[in-house]
Amino acid sequence: AGPLPTRTAVWDWVLKQAENDPYKKEVLTAFQEEAKHAFAVPQTPEWIEISNAVYPELQAAILGDKTSKQALDDAAAKATQILQDAGKL
Image (spheres, helix red, strand yellow):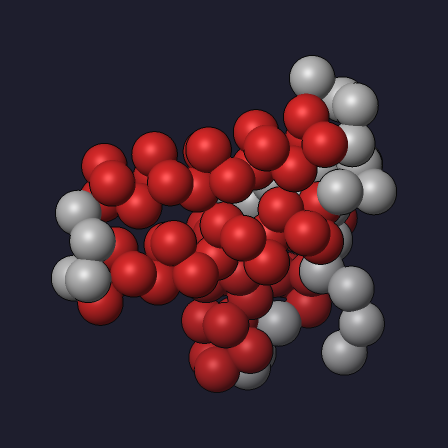
């Protein structure tokens, strides 16, 4: 266990180590593929408050309670307000 690799060369090494374990290789390959789309959490103290406002909007879109556009517009408005209140915008 432990953190996943962050460098391509390390991924190659980890996958080579798992080549005799089909399950581990499959899981690591899936993580490697998903890591291509990962992003770091923004380095702002307001991130927790923003995520607490944004994630329910995303859930509303997923559940069909709002259109994707409406959920994203609402999320953007809430995030903007949080940043304005914090003096960041």
